Length: 396
Image 1 (cartoon, helix red, strand yellow):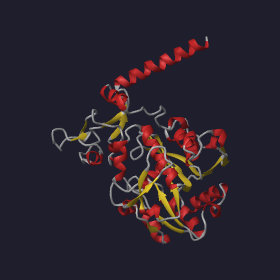
Image 2: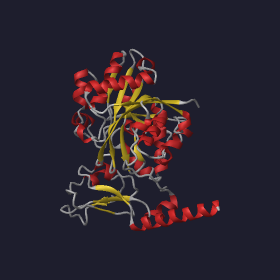
Image 3: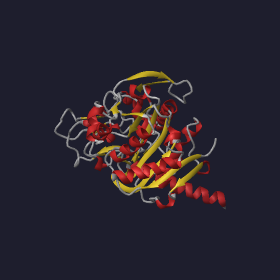
Image 4: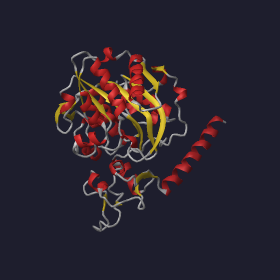
């Protein structure tokens, strides 16, 4: 495998002109827009729109980044459309609330169909042999991915690879959470999606990132970075290093390399542009331990004897809106009203919970977060101390 190129460009504002110059610089560093798309090609741009919220909340790819990429694609002669499939139905409304539809209308960029899709086989996959892919992706000649740099409790970090999950239309995404409760199986599915959709290149919005209780309700963190690559695994690996997260903790890293999607190893990545040391944020709030496996007997044991993190509701923040219940993919629900009383916050039934964090992602109040149990904290504290003792004995 040859070395993958990742470009870093500093940009400390969302001013449209400044972002355009930074994006042009970054794309030039990985070969230039003319080497990435051809004149006349139908290119669909996929920003990250978990849900339609004000751009200043940092949940979605910022409209200025979308505008800059769209302008450069149009200047290259490409026929540009855009879209995403948010966590709830009605992509157009989400795009407008995220400020993307207005920019697209100004530029004459059409909204592609991400609400419906067609079944496509994927014989060379790691796990999933067929997907329903959005019509907007299938009807294009190429996909350009615009992820947003955010923390995530399930896979620790959401970036270039996970952004393609939005190529699956609407509520069909829920079935993967139910069928693939193990984070590593879920990661295989994400890798399969990428090897199927084959993004031409990725531009990651890390000007303002989200730490802590991401991908919707975390705290905003200025990283002043835009990242560019044709290799989504390498791009995510460099983003991980910026936020002081070992790329091997992110399940898609090794699996993506295994599938030939890219590389996460520093020695196989050529960094160009601004120096990565100037972006590194050592105190970025993100879970730095690998996800637990949840499959077979071990999954049932971990759920019954809770050692791992799980979603928990802050009763002081909860407004009893019921969004978490609606978004829970399991049946019967793992989060529901207590005895049908909608006047009080819902509660989790952890015997049913598959730790998909759909409830946490969708909560509009930021009232749900990943929480370690007391038993889990005690267990891992003892485990860490035992590991230190074992290492000392091994070296003596």
